[in-house]
Length: 228
View 1 (cartoon, rainbow, N blue to C red):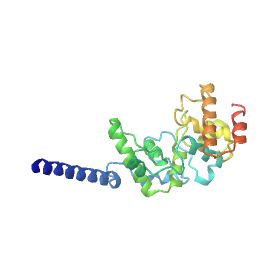
View 2: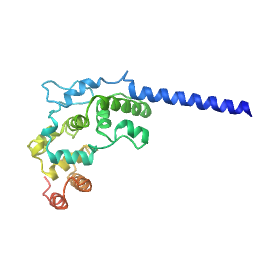
View 3: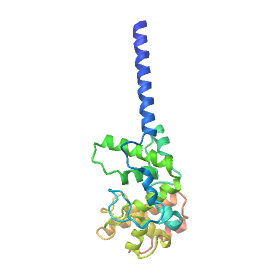
View 4: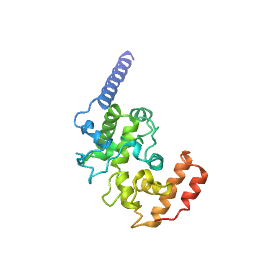
């Protein structure tokens, strides 16, 4: 009986060491991952293309302050809440990583790996991003790196492409339409599939209302606004 107990304790001890080592590697080791320092170019305006293979196209990079309130609210509601849990906290709590860091991580990783390995690298990259950048910076990266279909990268480029205006000038329904594109740009394309785009736009408006980014009156007016 003592031998079995000792063996059990040895196994538990070994498992604890493996888990601790894996956690340390996950949190602190950035080897084999993209250099997150280069992502500063997605926070501040730059005159050269961002050197990230997966970010096809040339994003129009704008600072957080130039996003505009409606664009920020729509993106936060539809894609990644600005006050969401950190990736590390999400991993600990097993509630997934819905933060801006996870979104940006997926955008900059280009590897063709098995789903599990890719997911691990996405988490590792997101943790490195969170260690270096503020939540506001990460949200700005999200806005500037998101893909909106038709080769359009970044909320500013999407605003100019679809509405011929800057993102800080977007109305609620316009911002909601753009934010709704991000999950499935081709499927929700307002050009190819206007009915789907209209439905998705109003879904995002409802998300904005639920998060109290807008008032019920604002939501009602936006949902009944003419569709482009």
